[in-house]
Image 1 (cartoon, rainbow, N blue to C red):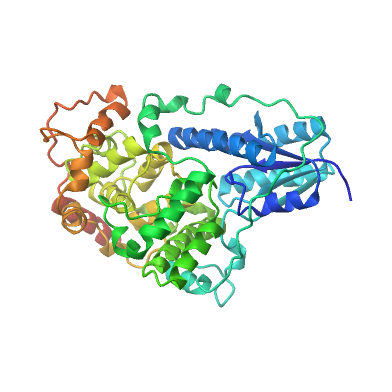
Image 2: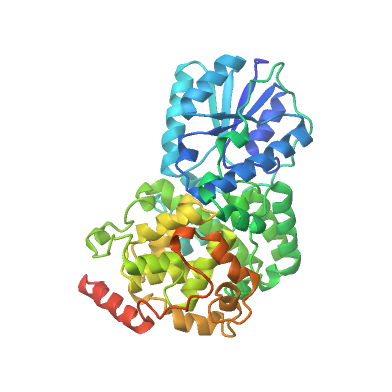
Length: 473
C-alpha cells in the first residue's frame, strides 16, 4: 500500500461519470493529478478534430475543478517523455489511463506502459471507451467478427454494466506541477476563419451531452428508425462528437436505450444497433489495424482507383460543387457545422469512390481534416464500406445514385435548400455560411452559377459497374 500520488492521463474520456478509471482512482483515497497531453497522437489530428478537442479539454478542465476540486494539468510533447518528467516532478507512483484501440494509440500506449513499468512506475489501463473490449467478443470458433449482424446478435443481450456516478471532491496533491496554457497550444489555428462559423454548431462538454441524450430519448428515439435517414429532420441523437471525445460514456447511452426499449419506445433497439456499429468499427480496427490505412480486403489493392487528389473532379467534390445537389449539400453541411448527416456521408463517399473512381483514402483524409466528430475507426470503416473494399458482403451492387437518393430522402428539397445558396433568391443563413467557412483561396461567391454535374448519375454508375465487373466482382 502507498499514499503516493497517481497521475490520471485523460485522452478521449473527458467526463466524470461512467468512468471506470476515475472511479477506481477515487476509491484509492490517494492524491490525484489529472493531466492532458498534447502529444504525438494529438499532433497528428486534422484541423477540425484538433480544434474541437481543444474545446473539450477546456470544458472538462472547468467541470473537473468545479465538481472535484482537481485541476487538469496540461503539458505538450511526446507522451513517454512528458509522463516520465511528471513522475519525477511529482514523485507519483503510478500513471493510469483509459484504453484506446486504433493503431496510433496502441503503439503509443504500449511504449508508455512498457517503459514506465521498467522505471518501476505502476502503469495501468482501464476500459471505458467501448461497451465491450474487442478481445471479449468472439465468434463460436474463437475468432473475431468480420460481419456486423452476427456481432450484433452476439452482444445485444450482454450487460456492459451500469455507468458509474461522477465522484465528489477528490484529494489533490500537496503541490501542483506547473501547467501549460491551453491558448498557447493554438489548437484551432488551422481552422482559420472556419472556426467562427463551426463554433455555432458544436455541443461541448459532459453536461450538454447528457442533456442531448435525455432530449433524444424523451422526444425522438421512438421514431429513430425512419427519421435518422432524413437529413432535413432532427432525427438522430447528435451525440457523435460527444462520444468521440468521451464527453459521454457508451454505457450511459446503452443504459438509456435499454430503458427506452423497456418503456416500449419502438425504435430504441435501432439506436442500440448504431452503438454496436461503433463497437464493430473498433472491433475490426483492433483485430485488423490495416483498416485505417489500406484496403481491408487486400484483393482490392490492384483496383484502378485514381489517387490524384487535385484533379478537377476531386476538387469539385471537395468544394461541394459537383453539380449533384445531394452530394454538394452534404459537403457544405460539413464545412458549416463540422458534421455531416450519415445519409450524406454514404452518398458523398459513394460518389467519390464509384462515380469519380477516386481512391477512398482521399475522402478519408479529407474527413479527417474537416469533421469535428472524426473518429479513427468509424471514419475508416465508413469509407471502406462505401468503397466496397471493406467488410461487406455485396459491394458490387451498392452504387448510390444521388438523384434517386434525393427522391427517397429529400423529396421536397428542404435539405438541399438549407445548404446550397446558388439559384435561390433569398438563400437561408445556413447556405450563405458556407461561403464564410471555406478558404478564400477557393475564390467562390454567392453570385456564381450552380455547376452542371462533373459526372452524371447514370454515367458514373455505368463506369463504376464496368470497372467492378472487370475485376471479377
